[in-house]
Length: 113
Length: 117
Picture 1 (tube, one colour):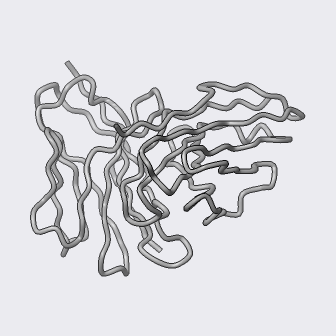
Picture 2 (cartoon, rainbow over the protein chains, first blue to last red):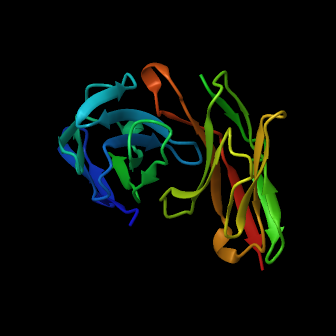
């Protein structure tokens, strides 16, 4: 089973709101990823967690705060976002942070008003 | 750093025909891998096929196959017997094989494939 789940599917928030995106996998993978994707563009890596520790932060603004509570869960906490942060947010996981295949979830479509 | 180039912004194919989506890459790594993903309008990135640089055979997975030409640094995706459900954006991607960005996927710009009935 190569399933990564993400909730919610859609999220609309104001610039002063605080919200969280959730990602879950039960494949025993030890690496998890957050990507941001604008329309008709390739995904851009934001964060990587390896064995529940933050491994890569691609200079993402502090209004995005990742959290990995355990090896199956990955959260992305959002606060004081800007309209330009509106995008599709994709979560992925892989066996390890190596050349292993990354399996993606269905994404959360975020709109910031 | 890796570089992936997909030169076809859009491609059209008739149902049941084969289509080739181009991907060229540049890397200084001796050992590397290449992935193809499909992204329908719903947004999910679906893994299709993987090719390792030392694999002796071109990868195949059902109707998907890779035309891997290492000397030309190309890894083109061939979809045989196209179906209407194949209409989607297709991305070629390569992970960083070392350094602080180990595992980071670099994507091409993507190709939008439209299958006509």
